[in-house]
Length: 400
Image 1 (cartoon, rainbow, N blue to C red):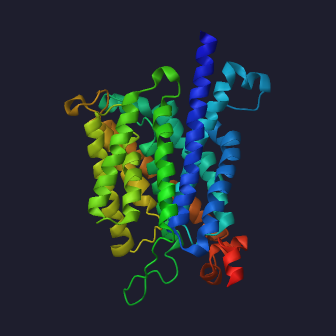
Image 2: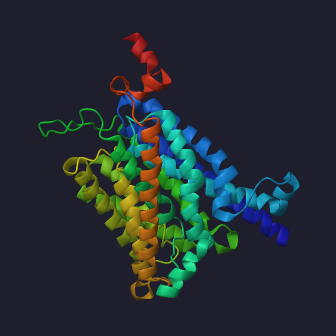
Image 3: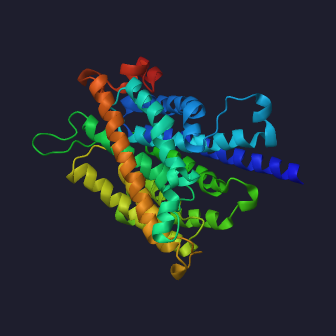
């Protein structure tokens, strides 16, 4: 029976890893559909190469930073327990690699390829796993300190803060340091319109992410005996809440509608194992509305050219999710309890602060040493031709 359980656990978390790996295709197509046509190839290449760099760095350094586990042992040791430790690494790697995939959307269309890969290595090798170890592996006694102060540890079941808020707040300094795309904001106060290049691909990306998210959340249990149908239904309710709120607030805009479910899912990650489904519906709806309002403000009023809106979507909705777990996870609102509002605020703000500091240091240093941005001519030609020497539709151009 023990051998059967070990095999089942390994298969369970492996399937979760594969589902979250598929989400990276969602990141790619969401960015492809949002950016202009001259940057579509670059969107696809970035996500795949960022994932590859993340894999090597997290295997060699990052996983050890977070969990103290080294893979520099014999294959016989790695294969123990049906290789569960290896597939757990695979699963958690897909979370870590989501960080550069999130950032990629914010800095799209004007960031240099090589410097972004350098940033990916530092972020996945140290910045992200440092906080991951604090939140999920009891590092430095921070969780014990929070529990002593508030009565409960900081709770983040599937990464509203650890993954999404950290990714979104890491992206904000990068976006600010890069500056807006050329001619996006004119000197006369006008704003150039850069509508999504391909709504079907944008929608495909959103759907792939949405489906994969059920692996992201449900399989965060990590062993089959801890699987929870509550997590699945709460994820579903938050997804539809975000969709409907974005539909209403965004006035039927398809870009907002397809980011709405993502906003809801970002927000429900932290407390998906605690909330009542109606609470999850509210959390998702607030996140969907929050994304529409804050994306509009950042783009049009504050003139922050965050191309895919990753700071509102992941940064702000993730922050809301971390705090919301302390509200809707409480028994008074139908939740399971065992969570403290104060602990959620402290842990959430710690994640945001660490990400802001890390993003400013990493991207500020790279900008000073090698530069972050494409030249004006390269940006005008587009990243596809400037970096990859081919556009998304070369055969059609040949016919022209």
